[in-house]
Length: 474
Length: 136
Image (cartoon, rainbow over the protein chains, first blue to last red):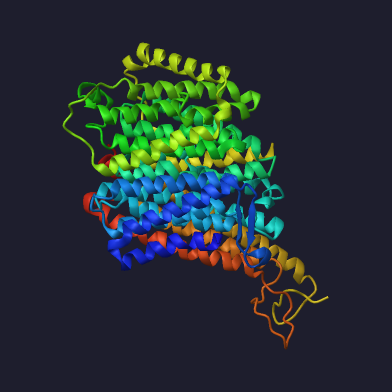
């Protein structure tokens, strides 16, 4: 059944070329199926392992962790397809979206390095085609830059995979423990770059902010997690990897939020914030699934909303009022990501904070404070009820799925509702707003985009590689 | 003991040692290719040259897979019931890298098409010119 489910999106993706009229329906069907499959594996937590073609073949492993990631992917894809429903996108767009959805799913269930390599490369190609869907030269450059960075990282990754094979005669994840430190460094360079973590992830803001609205929503909501998931999986399997993953989680949480606080552009702010939130996912590998689900829902909702605001600059948004319904959706999503009770961001934050190791706590609380500061920018925007620009119906359908998902997921972890747990996020939010109103709102500081230059992205790879090597040796 | 390698139609004393040396030299060349390709990506200013450097780097990676597959023997891994050919090469890395070659090829093709489009705006194809042209 798993095999049928994993093959279906690719099959549907290609057949939607033959039947262009049905592409939307096929896409919706595939994502609904993934949702059901993901939910099923969350409810029935027994891991399912498949070995195709004895020990040299493809290894697949599905458990409740994959279930959460698959559910996220299904919800985000469904919302994006509904958002595009009446926009007259060509069958090509939907076909690529379905194929992307399928390859992200396969990254969530594979348990050996080569299947993961194939899944990640298919993701690269489908993402490139989606990013450059508008066929403008600028979008082609953004896509090309993404393709180049990720492919170079994947070449390093391939060498690492071979070193693991040499030590174990198998590509399975478990072999990483027996592999030499070079192997860990090379493999993690690939995954960190694909997952947009820490300084290797600085390609992400430009790619995610310059794509079209639905594409950014899908990239930030689910696709980026395909690089993060294998790291979480390795950290859970092997104790020696766990500290490395947690340390990178903390690093990226602080780096991303630092940029996000000072950013003056809505979409770039959201993209930097993705870099930071992936840190929360990595910082506590045992509960990564729930956090990834919440973040996927919120971030794709926020990108869809940001695409419907009258401007991308915060400065202009402060002058032009936005329609009240849109503003309410925006505030709901911002509250969830800040960790306000009644939305699932609260449960996810509580769960993550509880699973942190002592040395991580201060840094992650700082990152949470930074999150509330950066989202205060959205919450304190002016709004009016009689605005003329009202978004299309597809927008509201997507919002119902994503924000509704936030409310429902909130019930799943009702144990979080104790007084102590409730006071802390409220205090963080209060402190964050205070800092925003007093300091950040007036600051004129603008961080340079120097590190996002193409040359520097490549140069940073060598630095990360050396750092990783010494971390693996230590 | 049978010699895993056949050089000059036979096994001579000292050949095993010779071949170990040869493998080490080959490995050094493979890594030089990978690193040379990566330095090309870093140092070349022209995006076209960067893409070609990436191809050089991926050639190095592919060669490394083939080299590791040949560690235990070099005979093509097709089972022959009638004759014993000595040590076979390991088929797994070869099969795996075949996938990677195909993926690499398609990525190259996509990138070159992209560069053709960009060349209309920035004929020099210099990376700094491209970034100043397209960065918001």
